[in-house]
Amino acid sequence: MNAVSKKYAPLAPPQRPTLRPKGHFLLFLLICTILGVVAARQGKDFLELDHNGEIQISAQREKQLNQRLKRLNQAEQYVLLAKVDGWYPCYSCETSDSIYLFAGEVWRYGVTIRGEKGRYGLTLKDKRLLYVVELYGNVSACLEAEAIKIYTYPKLPENLKRTRPLIRPPGNKVDL
Image 1 (cartoon, rainbow, N blue to C red):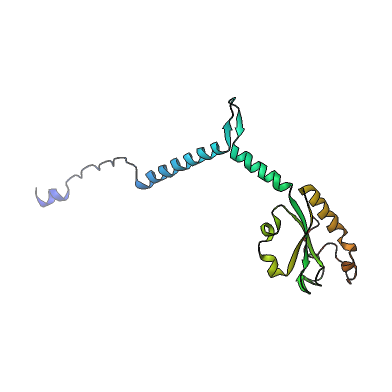
Image 2: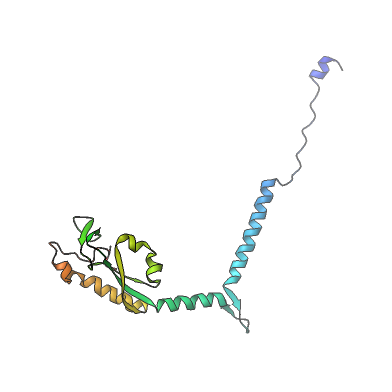
């Protein structure tokens, strides 16, 4: 071949690439498979068949339900009182974001099924508030007591002595 024929020689047709999965595609398939197995396993954790072949909630789920029902019957209606004289946040004040409370005055009423530590952890010490349980009982009874205390707060002597009495305790953002 001379230089001219080399220059104009026909090109070989391009070869078709063979189709083979790329590394990312295989990783994607592996992840999908794992997620599918996990999802299928989770579906079986809360259902099981009883001795008659009927679908029931699992023993573990039943245990969780019973624990929850027990907690709902061991609620606390509490009051948070000012531990020391000083300024405290006020969510009910019309003209200020804080209010001066004397030790023993009500800052907030509330209900919990987790107790003081579960509800507030160790934060009350930093906030200078004292947690006092006023009623132990089921959630309904505790919520009823809380509502009565929040709605009747305006007539407490500590509130009536203010120039502008509050509609609810300073620590309660809403009536309920």
